Image (tube, rainbow, N blue to C red; front, side):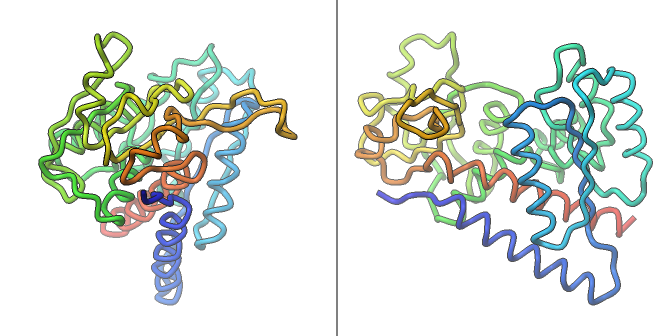
Length: 293
């Protein structure tokens, strides 16, 4: 069994990007500039955005954090987005989700300039991805593809089961893995909360991408020997034995499933670090696209 080490691969990618940024600086070129908009004080979001800012510092990107209070109105947030859209110094930006309940997330994401949408959530980028045209790929599915490629996991002709149908992970993951690409050419099935006899599908899968947000849902009796497991989920599970009162768990019961798996991502340290690395890669692409214009 091989651990798909997202921390190591993400660090490799950051080092590669840092070299490119250093070359840009030596040539007198503008370095990429990533902005992040954070509304409220959601703990996980604050941690995630903080990690993005640190990653930018490490590789030589410029970064801006727009930290807004919970009571920020939808109109005020849209004004900030408009300013970022029209700021030539900003190459790409993200609006950290989830947003407070009084703000329409879809309306906000629609307001982002597709050319600066380094999260890959805007319908323009989703449509281009679906048609296999150049676009910003959603960072988490992009990270999964990169992880599979760098570990040379064979996907062509394999049966892939994607657990979950979210716009952020499940749906784009199913599209990307069916396309003609190195980590692709697979036969993909999407299962979800309304799927009957779900375990019948997972037991026949060569590769499983679990992204349903239910801790330790996928167990060893639901998979076959030699399966490749990509665990996208991360949930705080109460644990009195831990100093902080909880432990982090994925959608996969690692202890039982790892005994059967040929490859598996840990939680934490698997897909999570890859998401940030691919966001940086998208920002570099945005800078290159803007420089060509």
